[in-house]
Image 1 (spheres, rainbow, N blue to C red):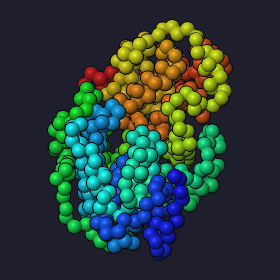
Image 2: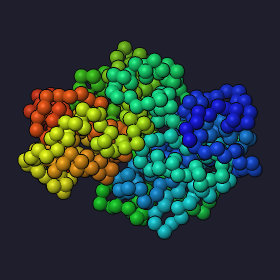
Image 3: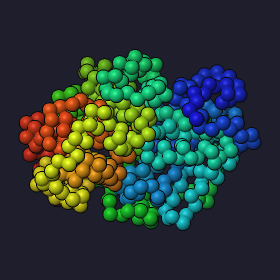
Image 4: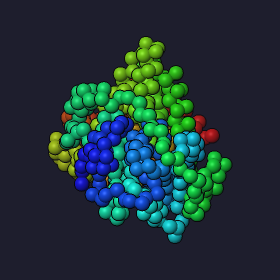
Length: 479
């Protein structure tokens, strides 16, 4: 069910001021507002923040219209694919920030860490029983997509998803866009409608103190022990480079604007220059909004007479092209989603000989002849993120070394799911499939790749400081 919802059917009344644009909101069941409820429930799945959160703003709007308080619920389970210390730690590091931000607003906050498989797995359903409505995040991939497909039919209250991940709502597009050149003019035309700050409505009925026995108290000092107590993969250690949370995301954004925005266009493709924002983990887990990043980048550029176009192209056009792809492509993690020309050329070269050919284990542990590729893989293993430009090279070499194109895709997604803090994201699927021709064009034909773009070690050396990057990663690994 994919309905644009007007304010009147939702509330049963006319809203005097609508903070959240109706096209961001989709009803996923046809239940009516539950009478005699205790609160309106916002269930954060991907946008784990308070600032510039359209879904939270909509929950407050609805709660105000019903003279009810707002409850913000956040959970973290132990059964998502590749659940491990790295992902758990990053998510938990954001919890104290959220609690601190919600308390003065008069919004309730309940966090639940499901540590063991035997622990209760029905907390959302318990909370929904006392909710006038459930509001959550509209997100087209990973477990959130599956939750939003299955939960609405199991509850007796309205279930609304709200798009707070994209600046221009995904619902403004009716079909899949095939490349940035088709997406760009449409985004550019619509952007002025949505490029504005989201101010949360003042809460009319404040949350009164209530705790459930299942709630988990998360402090900075407790995170290490909490992670250790969970039935998850403890072999993937927390990132050496990234700490989760909205405060850290904002610190990184300030640093990027003050130090790197002015040189982003020139240096962004050279990892040794460290000119990028490194915000992708925070955007993925929703610790910061792309809308807030765009607004602050534009404001900083205006004050300092800079041109932020290249950064905004990546943040808005390319990122939202990825969300569009995931939204309108059910098989967004399969080669079947590639354009016809790419499928034809891959089929033509499916049986080409690979020499050398590496096993998944050899590649996962960075044991190849290519020192640059080994460094990119080590960066993923230790930091939990690969620089975007080198990730293209990383993916191309896996295509060259894996037994089949299908195995190459499966392995790339596996590595992102397991190690990357910005994995499991629409950008993940788009960037990985770009290595196979998605959102690209045919190039000169060669073995294994056919007409898919090829990237060489010599090309990387011409364009970037390979030696400096390799030294940096070796020092990182050593220490």
